[in-house]
Image 1 (tube, rainbow, N blue to C red):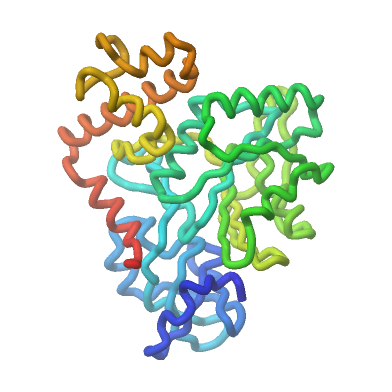
Image 2: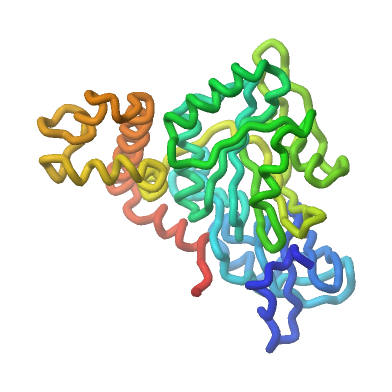
Length: 343
């Protein structure tokens, strides 16, 4: 019963409802796991009526309270307040967020070495995860395709740009370093796998499950782009009691005007900025800028600095735009979907 974390056991004890967790979603119904087994459930009308966006409805990883008629006919009465949510800006929408999963401990950012992600792209993933109050781990997949010196150089380059992050490489084909995942995904721990299509999310989940649960696909030879295989989100329990969630490939990541994720990703640069002469230093041209001095002294990676400036400027531009256009609308949307439980 490790799908139900110990910290949630007890919810609904004084009601006639049963505690369950969302393990699979469909446009019309949800598959839930509880101590009594799996149920097919539907949302109570008032929950859908009161929801202003799709992201306020139950998502994969949510804990819910349900009333039960039979195995194929349960009713979701209430969504238990979330510990956290992994979210991103909805593509093409100015005021909404897309929730990918909830109640997560670790987010594994998978990078297929056959389709190297830019440092800026990695920075976006890290900022998204940090903004969601989840611990990120970067995992470089498919190292069996290259010689050791190639993938070690790739890892070293990423580690240089993100020295504070947990980063490792592995191969689900040979099993090399796969044990690293199980150092983190243990009993009562939930982890989500994110990354571009073809990065190997479904393959590593199949390996950890020791059976073919998720459909996997090849990478197109002409451009090394992964083909979508996972079209939905699904939660699985490993033999050791840990929980893993697969997600569809993310083709595009937007940046929020909320800069908290960027600040956490580049916490060292934020600390350096305290030594700048001016409080409003942009770290691009001002005199006595401590960050620029660190670059001159070769104590800060130029590539890391460039990504920091780019993401920070994007975030600030969005903030100004949305203050003019929609005020607090997006912040209000975010508050509605996060509804974090009180400790």
